[in-house]
Image (cartoon, rainbow, N blue to C red):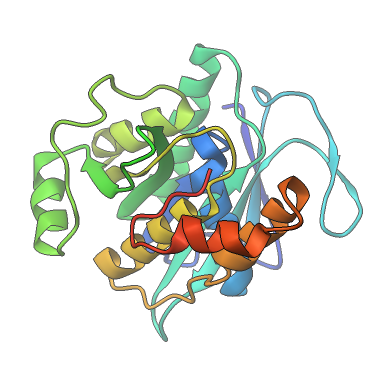
Length: 251
């Protein structure tokens, strides 16, 4: 086994979490930005770091200013008196397909060992700029029925070309490990960080799973900061134009 689990802050398990939200950098960085924001606004606590020999050999400074080896960070969010979820994210993934498969299976082993029941991968999908939509694709028919009963926007015909990478493996291999798994997708142009799509994705996840989390509401503020670099003189007008309708799209 190539996965090393470094437990943090006194934890030695996943604290009976029932749901895992997972994302890595990808299209528009939608999923990763969503999880990073969720961790920040809900005071998530790091419970573990996942070290794997397949990750690119890049050590970086962590939030404490310490040199840290490549890893995925596992954090816990308490969303009710008795329930919590975990998030898993990082800055990279294995580059070779066989190593992606190996790491995905070892992460699923960890989740199964801790009796976690649901895994949702957050991702973006490149689409036409006029289409701004959030939907979810499960990996078993039973879980599809469950998600539909919760009011989720479940799709059977997308993504038509499938999905690749470690996140795709995690969201599709869940049933093999006795875990209900799915991929929640936000459409985007995909050329840059899509802040509004990330926020809308979190809102949908919160509603579908009844989590009552603190959802970041500062997408417009961040959008203004980005547009300031592009067009300082009329950034507020640009924000109004981009966000004046429900399906306004930020690129």
